Image (tube, rainbow, N blue to C red):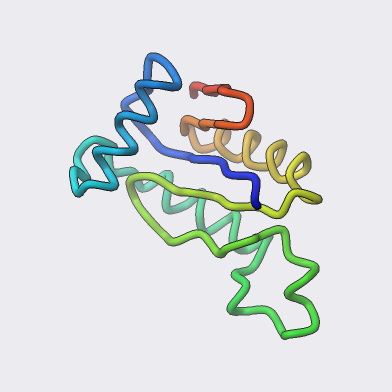
Length: 116
C-alpha cells in the first residue's frame, strides 16, 4: 500500500468527486481533461532530482527511497506513489513544490485539494 498524491495544472476541480470523475475520463483516454503544463514538467524534474527514480538507484538503496513506484513523466497529471513511512515528509515537500510551480495538488487520503 502506498500514499498517493496527484499534481496537475488545471482546470481546478470543484470537489474531490469532480477530480475523481476527471481522472476516470483521463484514464479512459480523454487526455484533454487536464491542461498541458510546462510547469508540471519542471515540477517533475525538480522532484526527481531530489528523489531519484527507483530505476536509477543502486540495489542497496532502493529500500531507502520515498517512492513505492517511480512516477511517470507527464505534462498533464502526475501520480505520485510514496511509501507510507515517507508520506508526511513527501506530502509537505510536494505541497511546497506545487505552490512554487502554481500547480494543484489532490490528496485523496484527506480529500484535500490545494489550489494554486
